[in-house]
Amino acid sequence: MSAEDDVEMHEEQPIEDVEDTESSDEEEEDDETEDEDEEVPENQRQAYIPGLSRPLKNGEELDFDPSAYKVFHSFNSDWPCLSFDVVKDGLGDNRVQFPAECYIVSGTQADKPRDNEIIVMGLKNLSTMRKQKENKGDDSDTSEDESEDEDEEESKKREPKMHAVSIPHFGGINRIRADRLGDSTVCACWSDQGRVQVWNITDALNYSHGMSGESKTEVQKVDRPLFTNNGSGKEGYGLAWSSLKTGDLATGDIIKKIYLWQMKEGGQWAVGANPLTGHKKSVEDLSWSLTETGLLSSCSADGSIKLWDTRSNPKDACVCTVQKAHESDVNVISWNRHENLIVSGGDDGELKVWSLKTIQFGQPVAVFKYHNGPITSVEWHPDETTTFMASGEDDQTTMWDIATEADGQTNIDGVPPQLMFVHMGQKEVKEVHWHPQIPGLAINTSIDGFNVFKTINI
Image 1 (cartoon, rainbow, N blue to C red):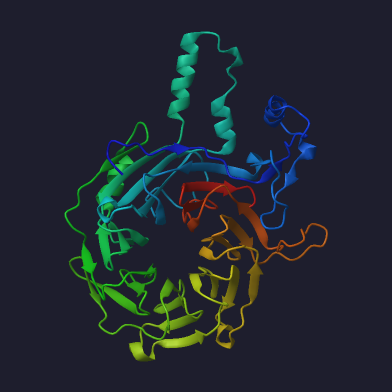
Image 2: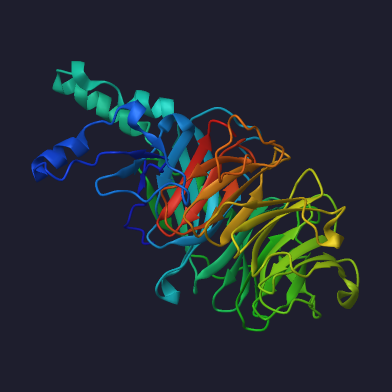
């Protein structure tokens, strides 16, 4: 992302309803175009259920119901960011007032290694759907040029903005995770060049916070990362900071090894010489327990999930293995903040919930089959014990509540009753996160950009 290029932030709308605008074959082409532009009556609109509804006919298009969202914004960067993390800020917890402001850090996947970046993004003026509608206003009475100019200027001030700081990074970023270490904010990056680096992004965050005016990106030159571990020279995807022991980091690579890092003085880390081993294929994801110090979960392309007591000797650290957790690759895993529950997602498109009380028997407490492609990301809600979010290669982001029970009167055939919301409108959704300080605010990234949204039912 160059300093000269502004980052576009706009209101790209997700997909939810089908508008039946098909014209008869006998009508002229002009009449067809005219009919397609007409608003479809409410009673002719149909709910579109991906994978279950019939294919769209010629002339039909997908639209969305804005009343299903409290907040929705989208924005893009020059290169796709296939991994990102929400940065905890100093603006307070449990923020429910809008317009809102939040910060994320992302890593790019550019065509050339030298063109990649770590991008620290400040997202500001994130208003509600109702406020956006009010800001657009009714210009039917604006007859004077001066009044129109003033209205336009005020409207632009209220538009969402993205103030970003770009840090050059050599190599595409497979996974990026942020953490707070004392007064500093850092991020760890798994590079496709086969190394893990820790960067101090505190200055970039402060600079982004102080930026004003239109959306823009500025480049910050950082001499070097805080720490670099070249390891085996092979790339990886597993990357997780411990929330219970400051500075502890776990990394997993494609050659089946998990390394444990411990922070030392002076911004340095000691990387364990003896990795955790036992997976038979690539380590795809890692997640630390949020309640038990030193307890780490891992998932692998070998179809298994493992639990590790990292306080033990590496060769004795594995305390549980689920050999066939999924039918094929287990791609992602997330640990519940409030209960000893783990959610996993695999290439089989299934989402499975595991309890620490029964995981040793290889039996999940819940299985959800809805997605029509491999699961790419999962994350438990930070505040709601039974709620999690997932994304898949079927271009869907879904929200689930495992406490919901079947109700024969309201259920839809083929749709699990625990499925609370389906968000669409993006291609190749790669990662999802909840904002830990703004209840219900969800963020995802895809090949065609980011969405920030809050639904009416979560």
